[in-house]
Length: 88
Image 1: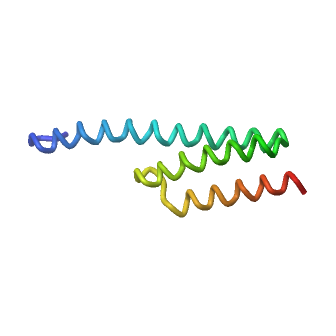
Image 2: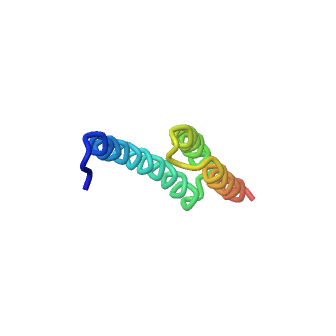
């Protein structure tokens, strides 16, 4: 348990930051799920549109420090590869 006033303040700040990061992570996962659903449906156009929205959201999360840059790149690369495979 925090004893000093600065430690108590840090606990409050961490709680707020955790809530914001949790919301951001959830938002990104929602957009990624929409891409997955479009891929599963076999709709390449819809999947491409969903990927562009998910990409911007994922990059924003990277900028805010929620996701690592390489993690975002890996996810986008794998999704775009699966979208390309729909046409083949």
